[in-house]
Image (cartoon, rainbow, N blue to C red; front, side, top):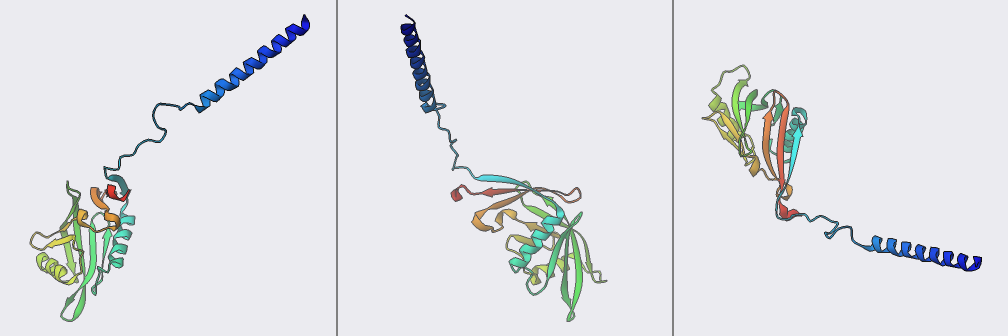
Length: 194
């Protein structure tokens, strides 16, 4: 009788092991959910990135862009961001190059563009009318198409959305607070690139 008991227990244990293995195999092969594991990504909407930077890095980027695109032309100029936007360059005056410095207050617009309101101007030691100097800059300096100089308003309109970047990426200014070094942009990548 001990032999029969032992055989019955062995067969029961073997059957139990087979059932556990079968149960685990079935569970492993069942999907985790009714939905797919890979989430679906919408390809219809543009992708947007929020970019935060500082004055120093943006100054370097602006001047590299001007040099790379050949926008400084025959008359060299540079832009520096301090508590305001500073433009340094030279202008011709009686067959001489005279140094000049213009400063602007940047104002971010709701549409993401920038207006640079002229604050001060220094042309050598001369006191020239602002509209005259800005008109000279407009005529002599090679500015990008998306930058419009308004000598009468003493301002420069920077249409960031019209700036031509690779892959049709668009830029909008969110914050442009130079005094607090709080500069942020929104980059929009068209969905057609995905």
